[in-house]
Image 1 (cartoon, chains in turn green, brown):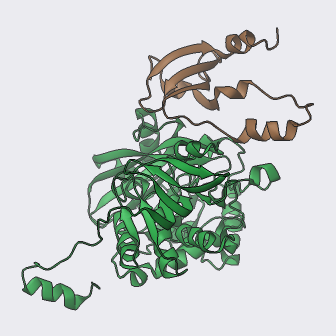
Image 2 (cartoon, one colour; image 1 turned 135 degrees about the vertical axis):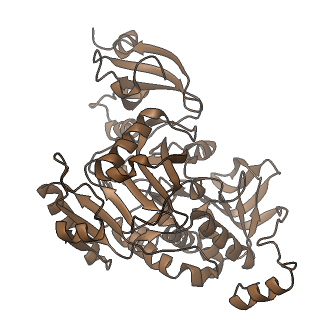
Length: 416
Length: 88
C-alpha cells in the first residue's frame, strides 16, 4: 500500500482498522540468488537498490535479531558529505544526493532535515585546513561555505566565542547536510525491499558459510542451511566475528562509541555543530532533546556500553564550546559497536572467496553512508564490478599502499 | 576497570604487536602487512597492550573480556616479551 494524505484520511475515518503489516514474515526458502547477511540500514538499503535499481530477483536479508536493531538505531543521525580524499568524498556526496530523494524513492517519511552542519575552527591553521576541505567538497559537487566569526555569531550566538584557549576563528558550513530519523530509514528500506519481493527473515542467525571447491555456495543458520549464488555480508560491528567463519582476518577492530540525549528543550540549536578543539558534535532532535557524542572509548569492545571517563570527556567538550547546556539533564546514553578500520575508511569489496562479498569497516560514520553504501554494494553484487564511487574501498588497499586515511594517523583504529 | 583512573592509560592494541616480524625474511612484505593491518578482534578474552602514560610509564599486557570489560590479568609487557626470548 502506498502512503498518501488520502490513505491516512481514509484510514482515519474508518477507525484505522485496515492497515497492513509493513513487511511480510516469510519462512526462509531453500535457496536464493542473493543472500544479504545483516538486516541493518546498509543491508536493507542493499536489498532495496538490488531489487529496484539493478533488477535483482530472489533476494533474502537474514537478520540475527530484529531489523534495525544494530547501529542504524544507535547513532546520532547526522548526514553530511564533508570529506577530503578522492576515495571518500564523491561517495559521500552521492549519498547526500540519494538522501535528498530518499523519501520520494521509498514513499516513506524518514524525516530527512537539511538543517546544515557547522564545523568550528579554533586556530588559523584549522581555518586553512577547513578552506582546503571546503574546496575538496566543492570539487566533488558538494556545497561548502567558509564562515567568519561574525557570521557564526549571527547564526549561533550561544557559542563560547571568547574562550581564552580555543576562540572561534571560523567555521565550515555545509547547508545540505543535516539529520534523518534513523529507525525510519531502516523501516523505509525494509518496506520498499519487501514490496519488491525481498524476503526479510528476522531471528535468523548465520552460524557459518557453506563452501564447495573454495566457493561460497550458501550459509548455515539457526533455521537450517540456505543456498545462495551470492552471499553478501553486511554486519558492521560484528564483521570480524562473521568473516572469521569464512576463515578471514580483517583490517578491523571493534570499538564502542557512546551517544547521549538530554531532556527535551525549546528549539535552540539550528543544525549540527561540531567542536574543532575537542571531539564533540551536537544537534537538537525534533522532540527537543540534544543529541550528542564524541570520541570512541578507545579500547576493543563488543559490549554496546562505554565507561565514564569518555562520558566526562564528551560533556566537558560540550561545556567548553556551549556553556549554556550545563544545566540540561542527561536523559539517556548508550553505546554501539563500531567496525574501526585501519585507515578510518570502509570496505565494499569482493573477498578472496568466490560468491562471498563484504561490506563493513564504517567506523563511526556509517549512518550518512547508508544509501550510497547500499547502492554501491548492490552494484557490486549485480555486476561484479565496483561502483565508480566505491572503487577505492578495497580490502587489499593496505597491501597496495592505497590507504584512504582522512585523518592521517595510520594503522591505529582507536585514533580515527 | 580497576582501581586506577582509566584516563591514565593509553590503549595501543593487540598483544601480537609485540611480535614484530623479521624484516629480512623473503616474505617480509606479507608478514608486515598481516602484522600491521590484520586483527583477530575476538569477542571475549583478549590480550592487549596498554601504556600507563600518566603513571609509571610501563607497557602492560592486559587480559580483558571485550564482551564485559572484565580484567583478568595484567603483566608487564617487558616480561612477556622476554619470556618469548626477545632482547636480553
